[in-house]
Amino acid sequence: MAQLTRRKFLGGASAIAAGAAAGPWVLRAHAQGAPIKIGLVLPYSGVYAVLGESITQAMELVFARENWTVAGRKIEMIKEDDEMQPPVGIRKTEKLIESDKVDILTGPVHSGILMGMRDKVHNSKTILIVSNAGADAISRERCSKWIFRTSFSNWQPNQPMGGWVAKNLTKDVFIMAPNYQAGKDQLGAFKETFVPAGGKLVGEDYPKLGETDYAPYLTKIRQSGAKAVYAFFSGTDAVNFVKQYDQFGLKQSIKLTGAGFLTEPDVLPAQGRSALGVITGHFYTPLLENPTNVAFVRDFRAKFGGKMPDGFACQGYDTAETIVRALKAVGGNTQDKEKLVAAIEATAFESPRGPFRFDPKTHNVIQPFIYIREVKEVAGGLNNVPFDKVADVRDPGTGCTLPS
Ligand code: BEZ
Image 1 (cartoon, rainbow, N blue to C red):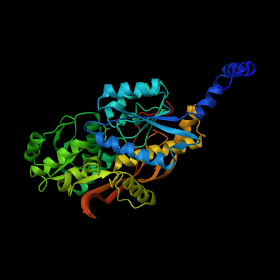
Image 2 (cartoon, rainbow, N blue to C red):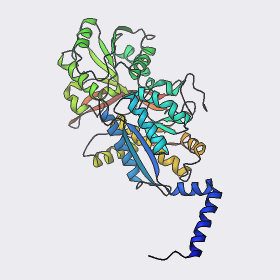
Image 3 (cartoon, rainbow, N blue to C red):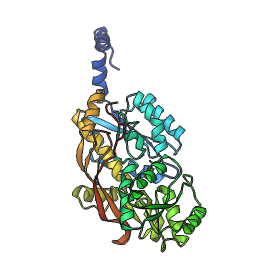
Image 4 (tube, rainbow, N blue to C red):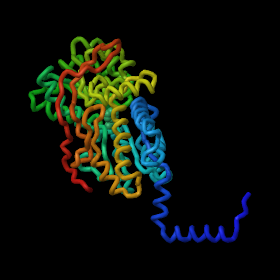
């Protein structure tokens, strides 16, 4: 081993002393060479596990395209399973912020977990790019300059559907969603346009999140005189509800409609032909023909064993794309958070869903379109075929004043 001479030792010691004196500059230079840590708080188990998986896979696709290096710094993803439990999600958020010292956080899927994370993120000035949870309040009275959302507010896919269903399907509708914040938000947004358009709510029910037996609810629907059901369910709830709706014999007589999550490609293979004919509103379908989406569907399927990307994958793509572009814009400097926030705010690009940009009023994504889609058999598989659309859907942002 080379001997450490007294001169070298003194030189080294004085460099350390100088570094300590220079303080922030040296620390910053060091931090800039260090990996950029992205913390993911997502469900990898439970009702929404398939959603967490799709978001993660699409993020990996984008970072792999960049060779896991942006502006000279390695990208490191730290994944935490929130187990769909708000206390677990909050604990994992604290761990990522305080122990791992992540540069950027993303997730969660569950609106209740997002509401629980909000103050931790805001008070610690941690940048959070929400990649699913739609809690409306995060784009309204609980908005934060540190929080962006690439997915949707719960209001966005549902508000256009209320008027559409009343005008094009029927005025007698039974509505249903799991009993937690996202369910209440989503059906509230549907009612906002359904009732003024002359629609009549013949029934309304909120089974628990993770319900496996919908028989008592389906009995009520049968007896309600409804001509259609409008539902929000996702993950394994969507699989169980759509299959049991068909097995109960309701599909032929009472049209099933809802928010797009009900029949996304993450659940379509398990739902099978029970999903045929279901009409939903969503910002994405893998059948969009724009060049970014064509390449995304091709690359995603090639990397993940033929799996069809869903809206959640599109959200993961847009989250990673936002991160890559904003980091390039600031030359990889994650220390100056104000600058990084400004770079994220200015990010705009062609997404698989169409032109992507954040609403400067709320930091929530503006949906280029909400597509009205019907599940049909296409090219040998089931898919959501768009046949109508509503343009430029942005959350009203009531009560949000940024920066706050
Ligand atoms: C939510 O909890 O916000 C949510 C979960 C699944 C799909 C859509 C929204």
